[in-house]
Length: 256
Image (cartoon, rainbow, N blue to C red; front, side, top):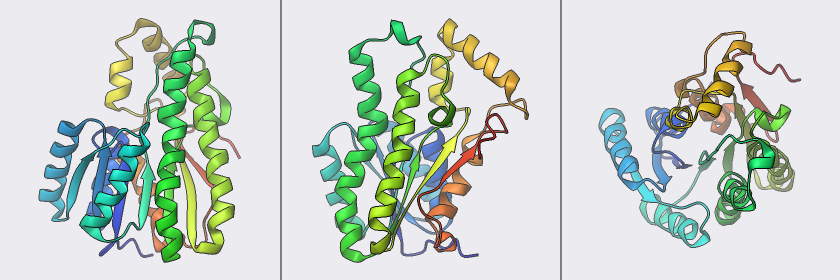
């Protein structure tokens, strides 16, 4: 099984912290050069520096707002300037806020969809032409198991994550002939800075606590438990896998 990414370049959105950071570290450890595309430039620079030093790979940060196409086009151009090509795209940037649907607002709906779903759409629309021209590439989109089964207080978040699954399957069909594979990793709840921030809200803390009670493994996942599957799906070892959704959730949702 080959997980060698030597001489390959990878873009990871939302790579400054949480699952994205673990994904960046895993790719760098496998030999890849990585661009961290994140709105949090200071965090992204710190992550890039630490991983570069530990893995002896080129890891750079490019400040990117995935809701702005201008930022995404600049990210693509800077990656090509630095590394000459883009072999792998991992869309990991995401955001959430737990509220009952009737307490949400159109402004919140738009924010959630712009970051979680349309950010993925814009990234793929910007990067895919380069991959099509080269007739090779791999895309791994990070969704969530809320997109499979729904989740209390996450009507729009769950919808955005379900949309990622449908979108990924469609572009996987359209670009299989171009030797481009598109797959989805669908985590359950993980210990991330976003989850820790959300716990500060009493309503959210109660919901998260109740969910843990239903997880057979009785704990949240860790980002480092998500990253290996992302790397595998982008590797040559997964050369016959495309258009698939893979859950990592401690057994919470055992969906076929």
